[in-house]
Amino acid sequence: VFTFTEITAIPLEPALPKISLEEPINGEIHSGIGSLRGWAISEDGIDRVEIYIDGKYVFDAPYGGSRSDVGAEYPDIDGSDNSGYSLAYGYSNLSYGEHTMKARAVDLNGDFVEDTSTFTVVGFDKTFIFSNETVNVGDSPISAEGDEIFLEDVTVGDKLYNLKLK
Image (cartoon, rainbow, N blue to C red; front, side, top):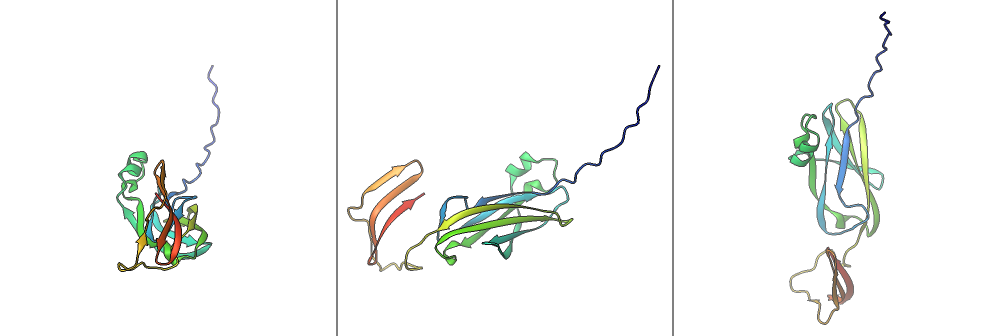
């Protein structure tokens, strides 16, 4: 005896885009000019990657850079190997202190997903140190831990700084 049961198809949820904001690094200190980068993918294709700083839209990041690591992780998503976004960004244009950056990947259907990073901007009192200005490490105590080097009592011009280099 055979019995038949009616099977009802359950529609699959649409796959949302995926995004990773790799730099600025969450919880880290940034200054000067550095990278703003990450990757974004969607089964429906990425239309744009929007960048927001402290809740305000600032620009769309250039998108389409080579990312073989992402392509290897998501081989079934077309374009995943060209899913990078990246640019040089002037962190020194932001005020000193804590900031939040949000990257929003918007796919061709208008669906979006976001990733955020909270970081601190630091810098010297001057925006540029000229070659004829004195930077003196003199007898500054120097120490290291992991991938960081610490210099204490460094003089730049007439100001005293404690520096952490990473």
